[in-house]
Length: 328
Image 1 (cartoon, rainbow, N blue to C red):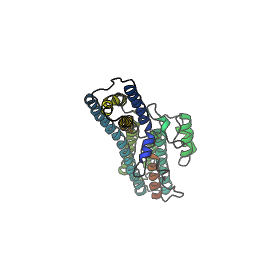
Image 2 (image 1 turned 90 degrees about the vertical axis):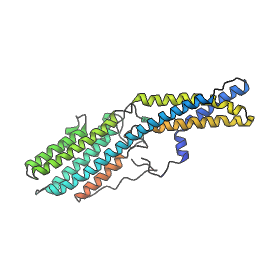
Image 3 (image 1 turned 180 degrees about the vertical axis):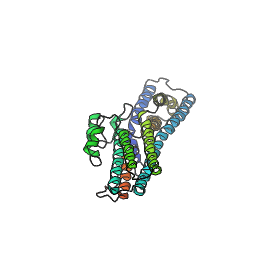
Image 4 (image 1 turned 120 degrees about the vertical axis):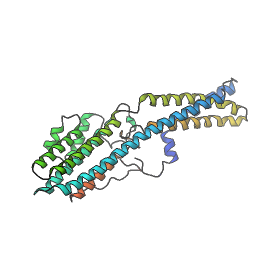
């Protein structure tokens, strides 16, 4: 997630500059052919403008839909934050045992392990994501072997080696950690650490965590429908190819030096449309590990701090800090 007030113009332009340069070169070629060979290559601007309006509406639809995916992902993690705090408060109030502090720490640590496993799983690569645009060296590799190795190192802070090993052959480690948590809650109920009503409240939180995980996995594993994404790209390309033909007459009738402005203006129009398309394209997958993601690492760290402070734990980590304006 980008944390500064605005992307600078040059940062935005550098991210999306190629449509401008290619559009300017393409428009310059058309201008050269028309001027030096005296070829009539212009088209009426009116039908081209109708196409441009249609493309703009379509890009608006795509961007709204992409934004909805990103905002829903943020709301999902907002729910995880709230329910995690509820879990910590419930444990503080409910557990009655000679080993209460040890039990609270075990459950809190397993919950942090679930947050860690879920974060790693959500940042595994999918074929429709922007793999080349990931923040280098920050997130888990794309192969399952590397994912398991890196995740194990993280989980060693919170779980025993025996428990970690029991998850190693599971396809969805985060789901299995929640299952283990539910079993542990039942064991604590059987030991009379709390009564049935409070046990049901704790189990309700497990259900809510499963629901939040499922919602996040739905966004991760089901892409923005490719027919909509592909159509937006091709419509933008068609409009961009037509733009210079619609503008050429307006500049040809002016002074010759004004014809030099023609490629720049055409390239600018093409760049604006491609910039809108690219913004939507990079908002479709809020867990892919790129610059505009939901900062699930920072959110998970904040949850960890809150929960460990509730049990007066030691060596609590500091909140995640931005790096060059980006929060992971």
